[in-house]
Image 1 (cartoon, rainbow, N blue to C red):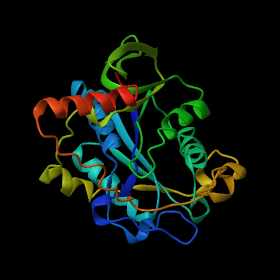
Image 2 (cartoon, rainbow, N blue to C red):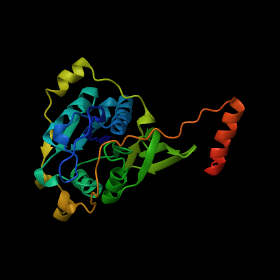
Image 3 (cartoon, rainbow, N blue to C red):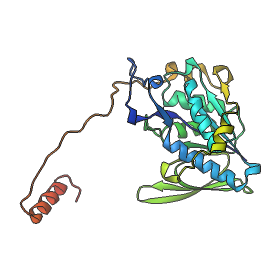
Image 4 (spheres, rainbow, N blue to C red):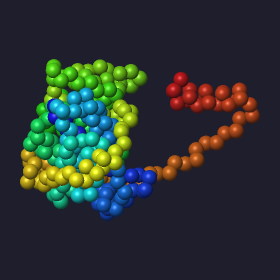
Length: 264
């Protein structure tokens, strides 16, 4: 069984966010981490591998700057078998459409039974790339996965999918794409031996010439999204401060506000 996990190196927002003059993130100037939802997807793949390690291969794919090699090596130190870095100057400035087109252009050259992505990235929060990849590839997608089970003999995957205050149980034939929630699991740590092995392995690097995708669908030129404004976190105002004279008065005040907002 072949599993491909798509991960993204995202800015560590604790260290601050920096922007270029054109409004895009200045990724080269920021500290970076593996996107949390993607790491949960990687852990899900590794748990499937744990069930039958001799017959399961996990390949991790990322698109980004050359320094994104670090998240691939982190993934391999956790237990992934291979890493693929998609990097090229012409791919820079991509929005979700161009990003998904590029990644799908790589996956079309690969063998896979299951593709796992994170639900969304913390630097964009669009939740679009995973489903868009499935559309480009023409395979089913199950999003917001809370639990994943694979039936190798039947070549199916069964997913517990988050839905408002309840959940769905969905089954799909493989090949299939799943988008994972960070709540899906608790990702394992890298091991000392895994770290050593990861830095001995070769990360494969693909440029534009390796991708099965049209030129008009990549990079900034292939990105229909226009950034009107970009900014760091906006500080919230203090808000209304009320000091009731009694608990009963506090209850009346809160109830009145909830009625006013049509919450109750």
